[in-house]
Amino acid sequence: MSKSKQKPIVASQQQIAGSGAFFAGLFGFLFGMTQEMPLIGIAGGIVAGAIVAFLASKYIPTKRLAQLMSVILGGLLGYVQSQVTGAIVGAVFGWTFMWFVYWVATGEYRRRLPSYATPWQVIWHHSFVVLCWAIFLFLITPIIVVMPLSFNAENFFTFTPEMLNFDPAGYSLKHYQDFLTNSDWQSALKNSFLIAPVATLISVSLGTLAAIGLSQPFVPFRRAIMAILISPMIMPLIISAAGMYFFYSRVGLQGTYLGVVLAHAALGIPFVIITVTATLIGFDRSLTRAAASLGANPITTFFRVQMPLILPGVVSGGLFAFITSFDEVVVVLFVGSAGQKTLPWQMFTGLREQISPTILAVATILVALSILMLTTLELLRRRSEKLRGMTPG
Image 1 (cartoon, rainbow, N blue to C red):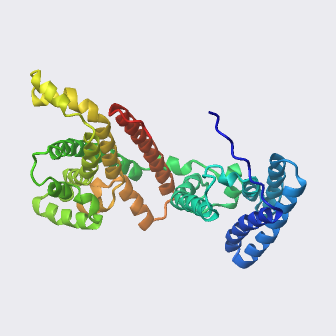
Image 2 (cartoon, rainbow, N blue to C red):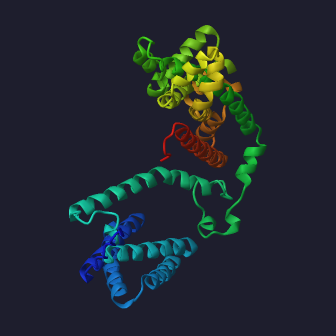
Image 3 (spheres, one colour):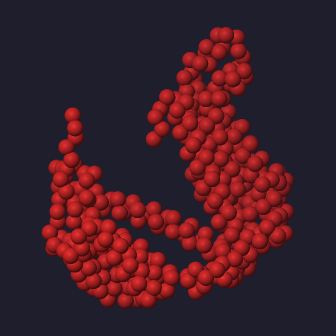
């Protein structure tokens, strides 16, 4: 049977003008806030948006032509306001504005919703989507701002006029060069790559064994033991750091590489336990019983049967443990010394003692490393679901 297509709902001229006024008024409010004139921005946006939306829907025959003219108009107005940067922002706003107007005018806003949805249900659905995007942008904006600032040719933490105008003279790789040539940064990077892999290895070994043991039904007090093992992830980091400091100072581990490695391993073990335990939920235990019936000892059964199937979860936990150790700064400040200064510690020092723009370059490198790790985690998650007969989603 062929599915019947829902006919587009054509909005009235008042609805089109109202949608344009709403969108432009919201943008006018944001622009007015930057100029300390929010009320004027709202009023100007509402009037201009309503007029442009009404004229576009009435006199311009196609959506693409309307978007093109809106992009050109927005780019010209933006260039008058802030040159190249303003032209880009204006062009993006022009395209988005006209898309929104036609999205309302053609009834496209109902395309993914049931035909029986009430107006309030439609409003709630789209409000929820907007809220999710607003939260996403709120979380991602600081990261997006840091990246271009790391290429600043000046020793500032703000965008210079040359950068805003996309002048090549305003961009430079000198902060990355300073990171690669400065002895303090290189020493911190070396310490991070010495501590994090060893702490990850310990976390993976102990966390995997703990997860396998706690997955056995005959282990008493499993819930209590699990709560204790994952407590470092729940407890405030400053409390863990202070407790480790007082304990390490009594046993002679304070200010040593071994102390920092063990502290980071303790922080990484909960992540390994959680990911491996989640992988073991779909594990078929009849496979281990079959291996035992064929004469395999427990060690051979683990490495030949169980480990290949839970390997994606083990690697995922290891990546989480590595990121935790590589990015951790509070614990190492308590239990480490100047000889164990890691990259986050050096960044903290750079912010506290001297404002070094090299921090922006290091932050960009760490963000790229985190994105690579998260991509690997997603690929491993999909592989794990395939091995367990699930559809990746």
